Image (cartoon, helix red, strand yellow):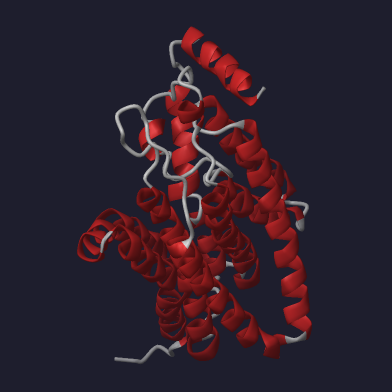
Length: 322
């Protein structure tokens, strides 16, 4: 049933001569590359708690997704059925095992978190529909491109909704018991490293193709797992540092503040473009991805907020007469 659905989409796609393929590829790419900028900007500029809500929901998914993927070890659709021919360059960006969809568990918690945030204000409620629509479109794009089955996407959305609910409950609980946050962070830190040990030493399918080569190399499949869990480790470290020693407040300084926060997003692009390949070259694909993910999360959760705090002091500094 799932393969037939993908074949139907493939026939529709071919009938259009891949006219929609670039758009669907863009939807998928935006989810994993630029979507996180929206809650990060919210966190820096306007509302720290709301920004963190979307980000923490996302990090829950980043912990759960690789553990599920590397436990289920379900092959991609084109491995399961040779009639499936992924569109465009999507086969090169579709890394890891198939179940659940990692693009969807990136888009859904980030967009879903922003949908919850914008729903609270009647003036911004219309944005909630756009965020939800984008999350669903991302999931559909993975089916349309032929790299995920409907089950992969459905479970990914379910995990994302669960993450949004758990995060909301956690935030409410921590509002009543703020002194417990350090213990929550410590527990998450330990779980992350247990997860790293688990995906490193567990057994994986070692099936061979007709040429005697591995159908799927488990070492390559583990790359995303190290990177995703590294994101969570980086967030936990950065959150602890920010909460203990930085304690910034969103800039909220009109257009000047908005410009400063927008400029702060540029290093995030540069880090991914230039630093990531250097670190993976030094440390290898597993540990390189993990270390880069820690650095990346630390930048926007703690390091740039320190810059914002210094900016706030500069804004408030009294003007001196010449």
